[in-house]
Image (cartoon, rainbow, N blue to C red; front, side):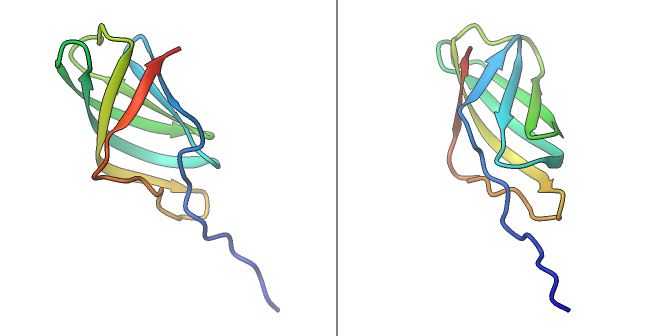
Length: 103
């Protein structure tokens, strides 16, 4: 008996947003796990550490040490422990920054 197993890694499905110091990443499917990032306020150059947790199709990343003043934050993924419900690790580019805009 053949049983199909989904093995496509989850990917970012929409532009990331930031509101009140929390970055929201929307993924292509339901995900679980945690993530660690470093964010830079594009207006001031201030840096922030952030940790995130997955819930449904979203990853919510809380920035530590204050709230950026810019409408745009650039963030780099330092540690990726995000998987889909089948265990496929999220396909993030660790060498490229992501952008989050105020919505």
